Image (cartoon, rainbow, N blue to C red; front, side):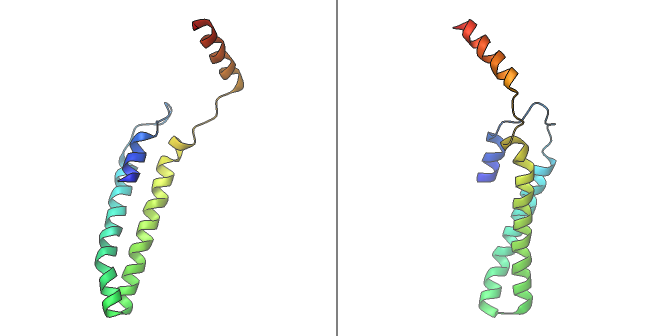
Length: 99
């Protein structure tokens, strides 16, 4: 839920093409890993089978991959390109004229 809110709350740069394909992929992968972990967790801790431990580890790896893809998806929104000094000075002058 936090990732979804962060995705929609961070501003999208004008140069960034609008596509939700990667965000939807992250959502599916993250929830698939969560479901796999939810199923394999009790199996591993109750039975201590090695296959359940592998399944549990792979589920955690899937979640980790989803988090990495989320960071990749949102990074362009978090770390926008810097504004040049000339543009900042121009903006300051235009604000001064308005006031």
